[in-house]
Image (cartoon, rainbow, N blue to C red; front, side, top):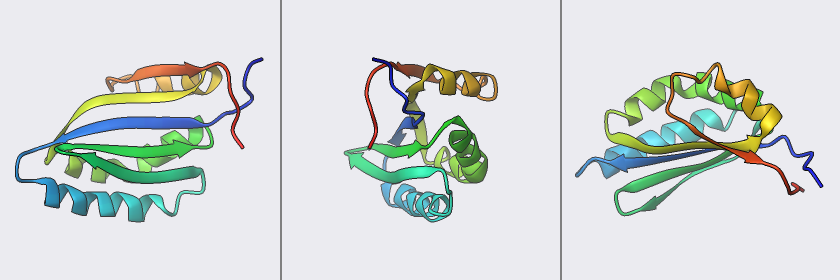
Length: 120
């Protein structure tokens, strides 16, 4: 049975430069503050393991993803002065991912297609 879930999750992993974790975490606070106003955001937060930071984030659909990227573009640039984006995935149903591939074509993204499941 196919899913009717339209949710898209962004899965970025950042390798933070030596000695820059405290500065990076301040940027994370900016991300969270700015993203908290986005109506299409389902959840958002940062988790850490040594020098790797991961942003847990999901949006109701592809348009929510695009709105988020437009909203935080300047903060992404700031984060990338302190870190390297070492992995970047977007997970979601094919019809939503298809809406992202053209506008995000210049980014190195691995797309994962959701085929089965549900969201409550």
